[in-house]
Amino acid sequence: MKLALLSDVHSNLQALQACLAHARAQGAQKLAFLGDLVGYGAQPSEVLDCIMSLAAQGAVVLRGNHEELALKPPANAVRMGEMTADWTHRQLSPSQRAWLEQLPLVEQIDSVLLVHASANAPERWRYIDSPMAATASLDAACAWPGVRYVFGGHVHAQTLYYRGAVGTLMSFDPQAGVAIPVPRHRHWVATVGSVGQPRDGNPQAMYALFDSTAEQLTFHRVHYDHAAAADAIRLAGLPAFFARRLELGR
Image: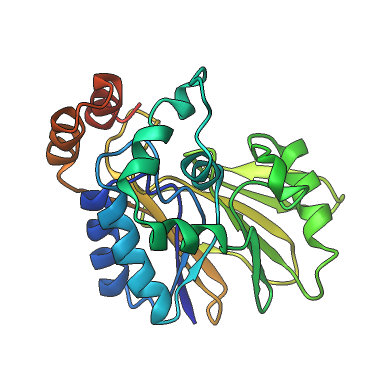
């Protein structure tokens, strides 16, 4: 099975559509959305309409921290991630909010555990940004029967960690479009990057494709009209910083 792994869409409809088209062209048979569907961007309602339709067709969808913010915006926005929460909340219909509320934090598909942040206390939104953090997530995930792979997002970066012969996790920086062997006799942790808000200096959208039959994981970068997505943010009256971030990929 070819499983497309899409995370951190962040209300970026243009990036979402481009990644979906790319994944289908790659032969994706199932879709998994790993949280942070909304926040920052200008089209949360349109993004949710699209993903809700795909969920009705069998896509897996998880809840991320920006769903939590959109459901219960803070009274006073202090952190950067909170700055669009109230606006996003008001763009969503009652049925969309109800749908977000019932999304799970974790989902297992055969030997794969899907989570937005870390499998170690997923509700605490811990970042997988080091071998130590990846180890904690993997150790927690191994409580689930048969899990060999842990796939998540949250950090807006594409990184692969694997457990070596001595038992410690090592990191590997993947090359876009190059399939990486991920045999199931080892344990693997991957962060699949951000569809809608890359932060590595490259504005191209990110997602990954896991082929469970071939035991391969491919990280992809996808060109999309980031200028249109940035213009939509400015037209909506949202902070210009978020538009500039899309243009710079930072």
